[in-house]
Image (cartoon, rainbow, N blue to C red; front, side, top):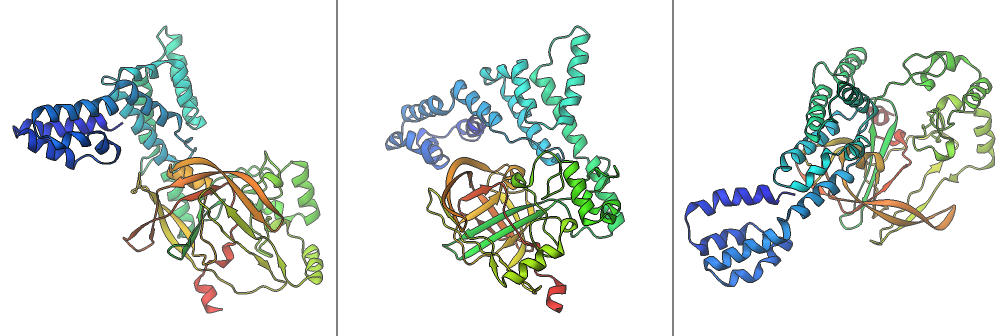
Length: 436
């Protein structure tokens, strides 16, 4: 995909200098690597103009064919992750790539297929509903006025404008919400809401990481229709525990996150109870149930997990539930997570340094937000509930991490994605913990 740009740059800086063929071959050898270097290796034994031309013929044949270039562009479009509704930066990145495709069309004729309406429909599947609604209105208006279906250039220009609107630092919806939250709370250092987790372990360097991302979201309460989540609704909390459970059952809500559309068995965003640290909302906690359970056993092991992957990665995770509240912490620190392809787009997460693991796990939502390179794989899991359970996962490559106040960037080994990773936020060290 970068061959055309690289070729024009090399030609401008090297070819037009009027230097000898031997010097041009020297620079060509210096600025190619990997498979491209192997492709033209034989030409470096000569130093004449014919050898230089032969090297370029081989590079053009392998990387410069319009069919190969347009195939690379279309594959990247096809594999592009869906842009989330509130991911303004992700929308801008997608718009930038569409503009790159548009600029490449005059040089890569095969990309003209992007002007087709069915190809446009495929791109719409990558975008949030509010963008699709605006584009639909614009397309429908054009067709009603007797015009043709808008071109790919029109779509790229439209998306660029929408991305800039969404990213406006002062007047966008995201900026206004952030400003309102900042003024109301005074301190946005800790935001409560749904959480996604990253779990990283490295046996070679004996450093392990677990990360939790907290994002603030607005919800419409199903009880009072006010913009707050159900578990924070004053009217809901006034109800007895029995009536709360009855309401959740009648509304067909998930017992893990109090959302509609799925059940607790398939819930990927379970809340953590502030009372017992179990995986359920605090408002549904039953003291009678847990008191009876604690009388039966003083210590219960929740889960132990071993993972076998094609890379022979293994990980063990144990959670112990005790009858009394204890002051326990883990080695959890805030870090910046990014990818080698886009190191400037960093995500602030929590990292758990787990000395008992030697594999890397990352939450699927985090990989999508970072637009990391993924490859489908099968993992064999062994837990205390069963052995050799094969689950679908994704191999995630080229992740980068650095300390919160550090400029040193560390490349993580291969990671594996999971749709849900248990995390106990009470184990994050705080000033209050230290005082106790």
